[in-house]
Image 1 (spheres, rainbow, N blue to C red):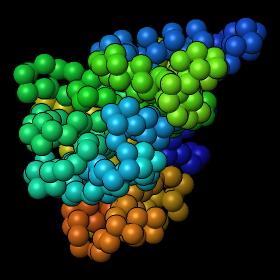
Image 2 (tube, rainbow, N blue to C red):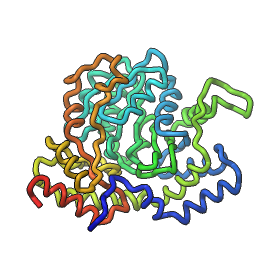
Image 3 (cartoon, rainbow, N blue to C red):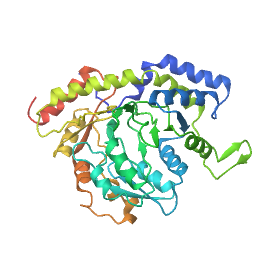
Image 4 (cartoon, helix red, strand yellow):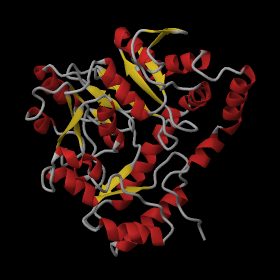
Length: 375
């Protein structure tokens, strides 16, 4: 009998490159340099090259990446930043860390990402726009950049789930997520497509001045060891995580290709099953397939059936931010963001990661089809 199927398997990801990862960690420990330094600089250069940006600045987490990107733009007290409520709380939390308030808009029915039409009615007066490339699928950046540009609001991509995803720009150029907005924020949380051995993140941009400011702000506003140009934070990427990420970056494209292959197997095997709605595919946007999220009106019952069968399905995210206690002060009520709320009630994440064996995936498919009486 097959063992249970995890939602994500970070141990399997380690075993795929274990020797190289162990060597990288040993190199850093042997050198004795743990804060910034050549390991971080080398990863920053490699990740900027991967994303197609002039610069990448390593920071302590994805939350810090959003916060510092906004702070570098001068976002602060009294400002509002437009974002979505169908996302992890860090998207809005980082706005608050910058001293600003999130202004939530609804998402697209098909993708769950920021709806440019909703943005058009809410962007006036905003200090910035923070679209989230949800589950690995980029938002409609051409439309969002046009709306935000008309309002004079810079766009910061929340690319925490979109390592390697691509977007076709209004000019027809294919660019990776993280290379389209004014700046972008990435998370390297262990379960991400590019995952560290703990918390880590990065800010990408083509603007050297903004990159330099992010680098300064992550390191206490420091310009030299004991000179501080401004008040900053202790949000540096450490050398151990940078070394791990450099090794894992070499396998990212192959891992994303494996995710795409497994996602196609799900789509083919579950087509027409019950009321399942598969993840959207959109011309001009390529998903990094961070999560394989389907929708069904029977989400909670299907989730229970999966777990009873040893399949660790999950929900990303069951309670939208505008209905969370942390954001009650914004004055929202149920019904304010109807598409967001529908996604929160119906979304279900099925196991998907490069090391997922087809036999494991077949087990997931069998459980889902059986639930709908189509085994």
